[in-house]
Structures are given as structure tokens and as C-alpha cells.
Length: 348
Image 1 (cartoon, one colour):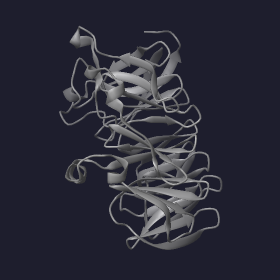
Image 2 (cartoon, helix red, strand yellow):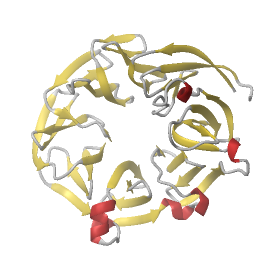
Image 3 (spheres, one colour):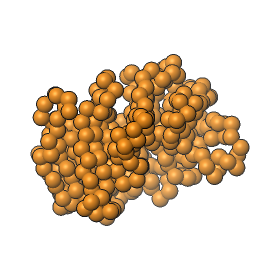
Image 4 (cartoon, helix red, strand yellow):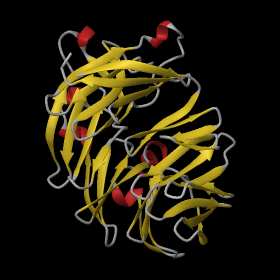
């Protein structure tokens, strides 16, 4: 595989991919392919299936963009971005949970108050699963009463003081075979019954891996259709089958020659490749290299070290690379975007 640096763009707030197209904010404009929106966006959440983008501006204003009619709706309340939505945007309405339906443009404010930070949420078939730091709650659409709820103490048998200090629910992944999957502190996975919230599975990810590959797994790739969750970080790549609770694919980057050993910091992935940033023969800090790992061949098929530290000790690749439309997009900590284009399919 060969990629060539084609373009460098300065002063980018962020990058993302929508339907193989680059989403980028430059000079107070939000670009989605050839579409331009007069909005200085800072953070966004994209639902490609619904053609909806929600986000916050640099002034912390809140907005919804309907990509079908290119209509921008500005919201007075705070939009909650860290979740997966189907037809309702979650809002913080003066410490109460609110729902904004972008199909009929209606807002519903529940009587439910935020007890702590909402770490993650999932909307599915008219129901909401809300993960707070120490509890997960199941809420039917436009209801003021939780259908069921589980505290972290109910989920995992840790000492209560240890949980309060060190452990919290970090993410809701999705549903496989009527089991709701979530993570605790990026190291443990929990499967709850959709019906009543009872604990069906709970285990440490690291217990399934060799001791030298243990880590805190921050960048999961959840595939509901395949029933798997994949990771490529630190010194390992692996795929966990959530139906059998077994690792079905594994590769360790640990080799005798440490100067040629990869340290993966973060990544995105598709069915064939992992697009990562990291360091070759280096540490986790200030990742300066970008690469592509072939999930089938189990090897890095392309990489380039940008050596950003030679320009500025505070310049590094602080976001996972994004791939779409035969282009690889790399965003650094100073707001510079590097655009690589795939030239051929030969291995380097």
C-alpha cells in the first residue's frame, strides 16, 4: 500500500468522516464535502444513517444540522454529544433531562434530574439507556420513571469505597442478542439483560490476553452485526466475540528489536484496516507517526513518521486518523491537517 501526502491545511478545529466524505471546520465555516455551513463548530456527533449532525460551536452554542435539507437548528439548551441517537437528541435543560425530536422539531423535558455526569447513552427502538458514572438506567421514551436501573455495586463486586474513587461506567456499546454491553473503566466489560437489567456477563478484558499485553482499552470498534468488539492499542490488536466471550483474532506488536516495535496510541478501523497514530520504537507520549495495519495479513502495510517534535515539542498527532474516499486524514495538536491519498495497492 502506498499513500502520498497531497495537501496540508492549517487552522482546523477538528476532522470527521461522513459517508466517505471529510467533515472539517476552517475559518468559521463547517465543510461537509462540497456543502458549506456558516457555523464555527468545535465538537460534533454524526448519525450517518439519519443524515443528522449535532454539535457545539467554539462559543458553546448548540446546533443540529439536517443534511437532507441542509437546515440548521440552533438549540438554547445544552446538547449531550457522547452517545448514539436514533431520532431524539439528548439535552441538559437546567439540570433536567430533555429530548429533542429532530423529525417533528418538538422538545420534551422530563422530571429526571442529572444525578452526576452522563458518561454515555444509547437510544434504541423508543428506549434510552443512560450511563452515569455509577449507575445505568433504562428509560422508555417520554417517560418520567425508569423502567429499571442498576448501580455499579450491583454490577460488579468491588469494595464500595474503591468503586467510588476509582471505577465508573465509561461507555455503552450497544446490543447483541438482547444483551446490553458496556464498559467499566476501559478494562471490564459487562452484559446486562435488556428486560430487567440483571447481570449476564462481567469480566476483565485483560484476563483474556497474555500478561504482557494488558492495557486500558480506550478506542473500541463495536460491530453489532458481527457481534464483536475490536481493539488496536498499546502493543496488541485483537477481536473479542461477544457471543462466545472468546478472543477470535489476535496480534502482538511486541518484538525483540524494540527500535522497530510499534506503540499504538489511538485508532479508527474498518473491516480490512486499522488507521492508527503512535510511535515506532517510542513511547505513548507525543505520537508523531501514522500508519495502517492490515487486519487480515496482521502487519503494518504503510506508515510515515511526521517527526512533528522536530518542528515543535508540543506538536503531535492527538486524534485518531480518519479514512474515507481513498484519503487518509491526520490532524495534529496545532490544528494542522495532513491529507494523504492512496496511490496503489502495493505493499511498502
